[in-house]
Image (spheres, one colour):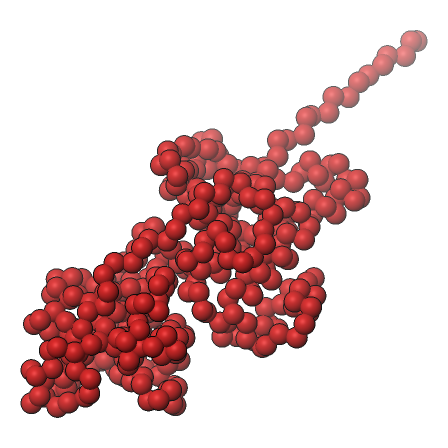
Length: 377
């Protein structure tokens, strides 16, 4: 009997998984770095099958540079941090700030105070004499619940931020601070040094930014169960054009602070009662010195941002700082002493009204309501 040859047909390898990474802040960069590290190891091992199984990744970042929250709004594309060549970088400055801070005055009666434009504290009988003074009603930070968030607002850290946890607990296992800085560094680092350290570490293996599309926002993601893909709507922030692409997987790496948290009940009150001062969020720190110098500033919220920015405001020449705290459990509420006694923490109080001239704020005592499960005057 003759021999009959047989052939075995092997199925073609499946196509690589297509992955969409939304955001090129720390989360996005660390994922791209991990992928680049694995690719390099597989190449060194000549593992063609392993290389073929790696996903095809596209990362989208709405800002003009990677770095996420560690970037400052005043320098989105040039923070003094060296970067490899980037794709589609088109510098976009942060929105210019509006009018200067107005004046207001200060009163105390029936559990309320009017913060305004008199240079010294005074009693209720002198309240109406104090309508021509120099104070700001800027709400620079809020660390409580909100009913809405801003859309499209930048949430980069302010320029002069320092970390409030020691650097050793966030050191990479494969790249030390000593290796990066080549000198002893303080326990608490400024924002810019942390950004430089992170950017250097994620680009040591390869230029991970080859797959990053800058100035590109994701405006919608929908999963199609029939085709088993994600339909991702992508907007070019320069031209405004919107396209749709399909991916097998989507990774959200925009973090927990992708949008500024705004206390809309307070901002709505300020608008409806025609407050004439400037209202800003703690992420809107461009031209901060010009904003606070010679002014009296109110912070809504008593957590880390309030403490940090209150001290910065004093260094930049602010006249006096008021920090309102509805619960009195934030970091600023535990500070025992402030420079020159120019900071007053108003515990269990929040702004609840605007003075008749629009230049002052009325703050009221707040108490937790078990009925409504929120703080109320």
